[in-house]
Image (cartoon, rainbow, N blue to C red; front, side, top):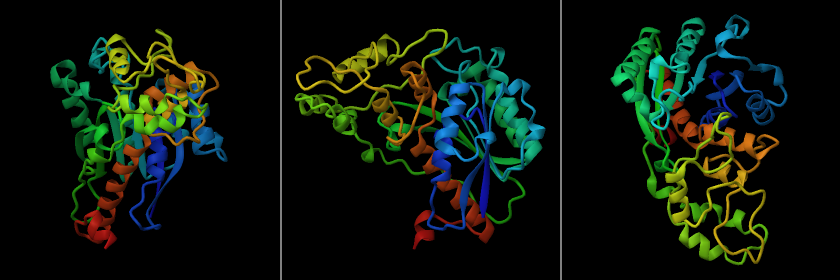
Length: 337
């Protein structure tokens, strides 16, 4: 079974990479890119380059509020990480009363139009408390009313191989008319498999021959605060507000700005991260190509969804659907054996 994936608010391709690389040991079950949409031109270009270089026309750079979905081809799966600006605890928390809060509704419209077999929606943990909890309840109700059995769960990404304190609500929905008896279960956390920042970045920090890299790696023996993308309003690039920079400083990382390259051999002091280092913390492959400037690259990386988490969730979705087709509930271990 091949699932054609459509994406709204696609970002630079983190969900797409994870979904298309999800593997349950059966090549008959695959997820492939069908189309994607985002409002930012640089983000769309990055997505095209890394996900679908042979089909750039399938990525639409348009404001979702003006986007004509009738021109899109059929899909079997939908992903939409709707904007978090009005739900984030670091923002004004306007929720449904903000400009961006209601944009989740375009995901609901896509579900009703295309009726995919499953979907994945995600947003910040602050979504649960927006508008005194009423926003979250409304969103879940609309997703259920669109014809889906949904499983919302707060994921702590540091428990899934991503060395940063990044927490997101992921809502998985499977269409109610899918046959068989099955239950989607979120992937089991494995915090013991998550590396420290020092262990993850030591080789990149040493690229220019920095003599102090081993000492630094031992000091950077923690997970990072949340990687942030910044905004066009506040500019960048940097590693976030004052509190986040203090946390980085405890790991001997200078967070006020971003470096172009790794430290020189005789460098002393606290090193800065490069965009490539930040992307690795987000779980992107080192081969991923982002924007042409640091500001654009860091903004995309910080606002992106970590590919390894998307892969883990995608595999559990595929397991559930396989079990559904067979008419029974199946665990990954049982399937592989």
